[in-house]
Amino acid sequence: MPPRRIRGIWKKIHSGRSRNDQVAVDIKLFLRAQLLEIKDSVTQLFQLLIQQSETHKDKLLPGYTHFQIAMPSSFGLWFGAYAESFVDDLEMLAAAYNVANKNPLGSGAGYGSSFPLNRTRTTEILHFATLNYNSVYAQMTRGKTEKFAAVGLATIAATLNKLATDCCLYLNQNFGFISFPSELTTGSSIMPHKKNPDVFELIRAKCNRIQSIPNELTLLLTNLPSGYHRDLQLTKEILFPAFEELKACLQLTVLMLSNIEIKNNILDDPKYKYLFSVEAVTALVNQGIPFREAYQQIGNQIEAGTFSFDTTKALHHTHEGSIGNLNNSEIAQLFQKVMQKFTA
Image (cartoon, rainbow, N blue to C red):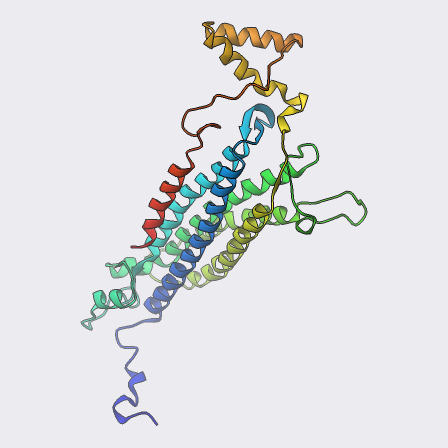
């Protein structure tokens, strides 16, 4: 039996509290913890992308615009592009984290309490960065905080979706730029030659679904006035499963890219000769020919079928963020700056 002095204390615990502010603080604690886990998963993938970018920086592949052959790219540039994309994605996730990192406890049902609550003290105990000061607004953060988190997840999912789509294309036999071990692809029930990118197809589909969540929450919240409403109960079933889905997609992407196999000498194929048309124009410009004249001259050669370019010549791209100057260390520094926004 508990000591006499604490018997019946449970009858007093509810003083100065409401389900509204108690649930609000629980949701924020949950979201804060989940956003940190997503941040850690993104960090693991970011580090792998930078590593792969450095490892394969000298391996060229075709760049495309409009699904048409455009200019030379490299696997270093490709991996690095997705690494830097996650820097901006984490900006959104950090914004969601900082919105979740404010304490609504003590706002009661949405209008405060006549008890002399020390909300600053509970903010310190719960390790929130600050509190939602206005009691009405503290309740208005219900749903809004979830929507911020959903936007953060959707931004990361969009990058993963694009990366997965690239991998599906590059694995296609008509491209043939990359491959994966047989245990990471699937076969066909009828065609023995197939190596299907099922993992990336499922990542793509799951990430599309995650990107729909901010819109679903917007429609749920769009006609609610201030104050609590039971509609807000539904935000959990919309958002909460997405955390596990996105973490799984990030972890599987790490697994796949850790085992990616890159084809060598892709640009030796004659069908990629027009990738070097801009290089040919630049070579003429460097000889003193005006750009428009050089462009027309090379264009005429292409139309006549007489264009040729010595692809053994090194590509001299030296500006920041080009094939010859990836700036991966600078991208890593930007990543670290964003990471600091999660420590407040």
